[in-house]
Image (cartoon, rainbow, N blue to C red):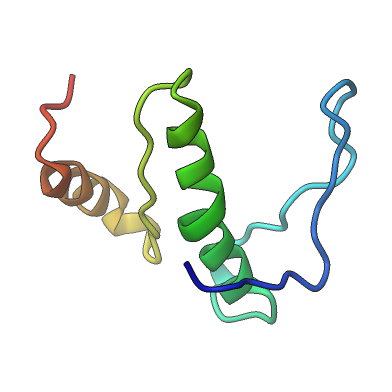
Length: 85
């Protein structure tokens, strides 16, 4: 796995309500830091959740067009080969 450096990580206590969140807006798709967030989700967060094993099997799909979200998510689920509920 490639070494990933995150310049400004979001660290919250696991014992309190989160005080920092990822900034999400459909119009900020190419804003600075977005590529790092996508890389983190794909290469660190999803594999960590799957390695834990207690939260089911997770995957990552980037939806860039809100009007196409349903098709993108369905295509990603079909690509996994797992039957959806």
